[in-house]
Length: 437
Image 1 (cartoon, rainbow, N blue to C red):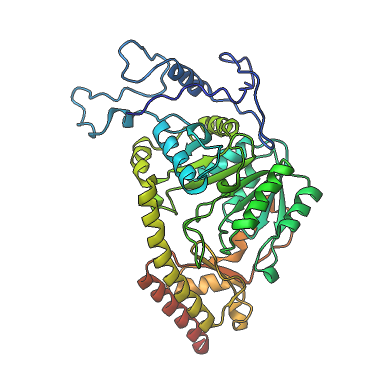
Image 2 (cartoon, rainbow, N blue to C red; image 1 turned 90 degrees about the vertical axis):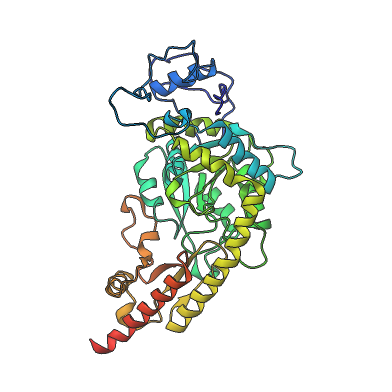
């Protein structure tokens, strides 16, 4: 049974009005982030749990709960049979047993032999990756936040909604296969005064991967310049060639409670359970307290039963088998789709080193297919779905008048091989149809 989490006093709760309880002092602040208060009811429940409250405790009376009784009522339909805890709200930071399982997962795969280890206090569970990233964004302070283009399409709205930080775009060059050398990154951090940097790794959509010595230098730059590094690692099990089993910035963190490095991941992609919507944030405990507090008003916490079910997915042996199977299957699909796209005349500026997407240029196709939006509509006529490149031109509030990647599309080799073949056949039909028009 889930055990209530003890009080985490690593971050001061600067309440906007009169505090609802004692405010911890002596906080160690992490660059780039601010103190975030919990909403009233969640603050109350958090305090009660620190003093021993549980929903089934015979000595407690919860007259502050914001949920109805989950007991069977006379003449009501039979309740769904499940663990009593699963019918209650989970703690907004997540079940402690799942938080511990996530911490142990990173310690096993990325922190062997290191003195500083992650604990449950370094993990926050969220209802999916978007919710995790939204919590992080809500906890950022008044800083310049660097982000790359192209990058994950959902970043655009994420960076538009919150006004406490200023998004600063860093455009990646196709001539360098969309890579950013550490020396270039250092220049961007210093010249643009970045307080944080957001990046998907491996990248969605290009498949660019930052690993090994290059990733170590990124983490070192984050530490040296007090620039928080927010790494979206949702595709870190999809690596190709002679690479490590998986990649994470967690490997190069020296002090888990001091280095301003956050890792965002979940079961959606890396464990192939997209419908579960169980994600997490790993980082300094002070930041974890802040993002958990942000969750108290943004989403209220992750699904309780699925959190419990996700624990077994994080066993090192099970994860190792899953990752190995992914590499074998998705390597074959990547190679197939790369070959077919080259045959059809697409230009691939960067062979994906990770993830399961191919970022394809349309510039060598017949002129009528070089506009990505037109290509998208024509492909739909053949029952083939692709994503136009303009959606990965992360441009919050449309502050830039011009748009990039009108001649790029993203294609996924996430589906089964049979579906990939069906998609290629559809694209071939589309190209043949130009002759008949």
